[in-house]
Length: 307
Image (cartoon, rainbow, N blue to C red; front, side, top):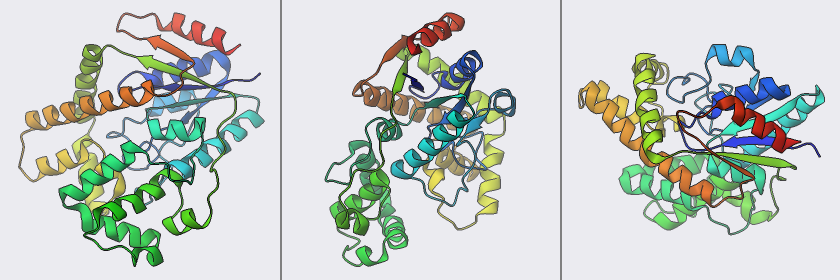
């Protein structure tokens, strides 16, 4: 049986480094499983693999979509399956790597166009609505499904959230969803999940270090460029952690120190949510990570588990 390894875990857990090491060991190529790393023009803020990392091992679904395009779990899963077929056709091993719990579920179990609700997506949409985003949400629905949008009033929070939830979890508009109740897409066969489990204190240290590095690498300049390139456009990827905080900083509302602290807090909270999500998934191999761990031994352990 040919297993397809999927290295998953919270943000700042060292997934990319481990995936690259494993790829060198088993003649593989890496497929990103990240809802934001797939976009162009935001490599720093989404912690995309560096040029040296992608030159040493080929990566797929990293920096390939314009920031003006909306991607969802169903569509992403289809892209992953295509990449797997492409990599296997040249006799290499596909290695999936990322921290998106919803996208992992899409490739491991499939997305159902039934009444199943994804709490993570719903919670995010409800928060957006409560924070004054109703008008933008309705506009998004109009763009996705004009006919169905006619049935929903902007003040009907429940129906507006549900309509966008359907799209983000199935990849289909509400109209398509109700017209065709089919499983979509097919889960990835022979998936072997590898979860990187960190002590919360050590993950906190990783996050602080990474945020500092990202700001030093030009994250603020990256945001300036995006705002200049896409003025007056509500870019979906910019709801990621850090981007709104940097926009407030550019307006003079926070100091650089306050900016870094806010990003660290938001990222830690996100890492906790990711860890809770993955604990609900069926994991094949859990690796207890630490700053002193021997990564070569970990790679050897993973390689043996795949045989």
